[in-house]
Image (cartoon, rainbow, N blue to C red; front, side, top):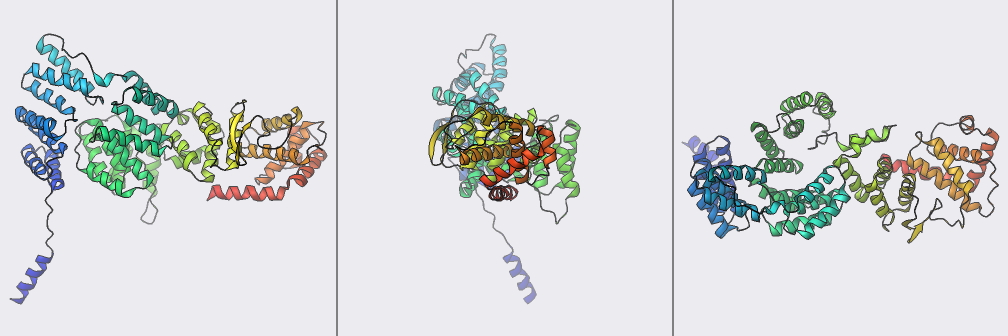
Length: 580
């Protein structure tokens, strides 16, 4: 008898109460939909509504199930209730109603509902589907549909152009175009969402968050805005706000393919890998992206993140079949082949290219500059723009050098803004000025150096030389020509700085320069020594066609005036910063 009591007590202690709330019934409904048990899904969505009577998504989910079951009239009644009492801003309900009316062969009412949707929806979420429905209604009505205005297509051409610029990584141009569209059409939600992304890509986080909040004030249920805001908050380290948005997203069951994909990638970036995995699997099951290697890559990343390594391996092998020239699958398959329990996990990325750290490592070792394809990669470009605003000292120095290899108008604008920023380090700004000059920019530049804003007109930027002689410039240009391809931009910048410093300290008693070759060779020799490069007097003498004795004499003089040991210590300190 005592044994029975003991068993009974232990059993009672292990009972875990089930929390019956809207989330519980929503999840049961989704599971039922995945198994095509529409009757059960219907029951669970009705129960979810009982717990959250003001959540319009519950009603739309219910209407969708009713429509799938052929109960079109009841589906429209639910949708009408959303429009009348729950959330009148959910314009897409009119599109759903149009489909229901078409299925009931009530084509006039379908046309009316579709017309209202197209005339009032600025997002254009169902534009392609609406075109198909209009064609069908026109055929059944035996006349053109009476839909004259499509709100989402106002400014659509300009918006497509701006979106193309974003995809190409031309963020500054895209920002200007999107700002103009939003000013002209404040209710163009897609343009606002993309403007927020443009701000985000260029490191303007405050503006990106403010823009997304404007979208959500106008349209609280905008899925793209909710996803973007969650990612922005994660980047800013606002964990409580991120978790709140994750709870909202978990309750959302996207029906449109683009919504499904957006939510899948967002959940993955937020670390909700199981949810991302389920959504990516749904997309593959629906036949989407069967020939798209990126979708298999995203699914592999999600699978790997939740420990499904063999499935991830199968997915990345499929990526190799679909895109044999890509390095992405090979990189991650190598990781799986060498991974063991003691190895630290690499950071997995929901982007179809090599991790940025790998790309940057390859770029810094490349002798041929940045490949054109990589220069245009929006994620790489956005990483550079972000790092120039928010990176540490060493990262900013690397980005400035990389910008010199890209050298387009957007880089010019970014570096021009950078050198005018009073909060940035003077050495970094001088390096940026050097890169701008190396890009061929000759006009004066406004820079904040030495605690004040000034116009930088020539090579003697920020230093107190009253004049700049042609022979002094010739020394720099000869050194740069000989160093090109063998020294990086920062090393060339330091050579130029050393030369200007020497001239400034000895002025007005500047030595007579008869042959620029001996001075240029001396500067390269000293620069190589500062960066611990192997070099000899005979090597530079042969390259510059100057005598060893002349180069040695010039090296000694520059060393005595500038203090080579102190400069070597400073360069070593910078190198240590970069390696940390």
